[in-house]
Length: 198
Image (cartoon, rainbow, N blue to C red; front, side, top):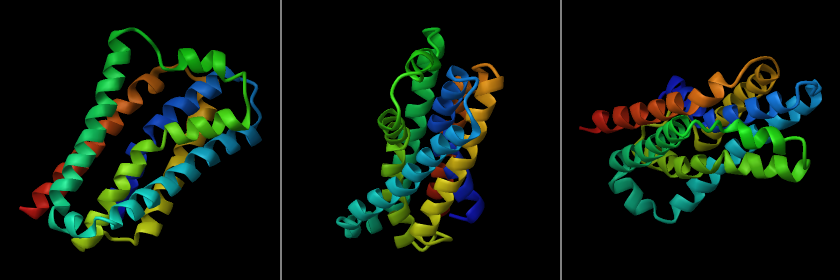
């Protein structure tokens, strides 16, 4: 996986955080920059740690992972991508916007609420950690797992910060559609890994 693919992977994984960040920004139009920075920082930090946790957990099954690396990567990324697309389409068809709850809730709670949001938006990155192990075993990971996780976290931070600031000024259009784009990117990356192994 090349560096540009890692950046794309980070962007795809960040879509949940982007949607929530935009909702938070829309709920607090007078939010100061420091709070926006803290919100994006929490999202980025969790997106950095979660792949590493998944990587370490996957290391316990390294022999299995190395045997089925490309297929495993494809299945994990396709499942996560499909799940993101399904959930987003379901919300659109039900005419239920994901920020409707957040708008009311964003004004309540503080650090604990932010940590819960950051954890919830980074769960997918946990499974991606297993994919990093698989790619490392097959020799197709351009960066070390730690550096890959740093890129994912940094991309999440930048996109989340932008979404919080945009949420203060823009409508919910991106919040509704971001997960479809992210899901498609995950599936395409998984397909590329699988095709390269054939």
